[in-house]
Length: 330
Image (cartoon, rainbow, N blue to C red; front, side, top):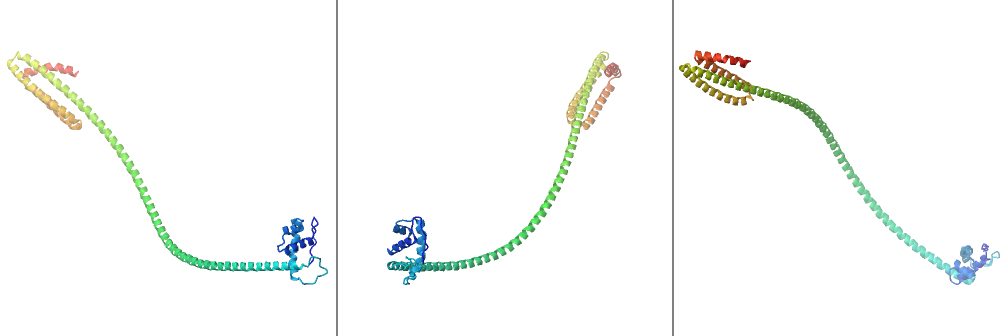
């Protein structure tokens, strides 16, 4: 095999690189770019590298045809020298043995990994079967649970509907209660206004009765004072007439005493009437009737007293009292 003629920039030729590689191989070392460059003493890695690759490419062919007769077409250097050939075969055998060992180890490792993967796959298959069975059991359990849950949901839905119905009924009752409450409040407000109006009327009526009772009390006091004044005047007249008639004086004195006693009774009646007047502020109508009755009794007593006086004395008292009554009326 004729190597490609690649010329480097420094004049390094293919034959030089091949010869240097053969020399390195003959030394029992593996030809590398650095060793070939050291053997040559020149050349860059970029130049030596492609030529060394070509040497490696033709090495197998050169080893397989070591005894073949030299072909005139072959360039010098294609046929390996004997020592180089032996070293190359030794190196090749070592390389082949190393490759076989590595291949055997790689195959053993691959087989071990394959066996391990098979065990793992088998275990994974078992795990998968167990997981599938677990999932199937879980699916069945979930299906049963879903059926129970559907039944529970249906029951709950019915309860919710019932609660909604009860809620609507409660809302209706609440609305009715609120409406009734509003009516009760309105009725209470009307009743309160009526009560306030009645209380106002009652207060006004009580005030009116109190004023009326006070007026009657004042009138009664006036009548009592007037009766007392008249009795005193009558006593004076009787005392004057007593000088004219002892018997008349005695009778008049007796009548005065009776009149004073009657006056005391009238004063007692006045006190009693004052007490009754206080009670009459709560019952004005009853008090008024009692007051009228007492007034009538008083005037009846006065008339009775006048009737009991002697004719002359009574006439004189009446004549003496007439001008004063006229003045009182005016």
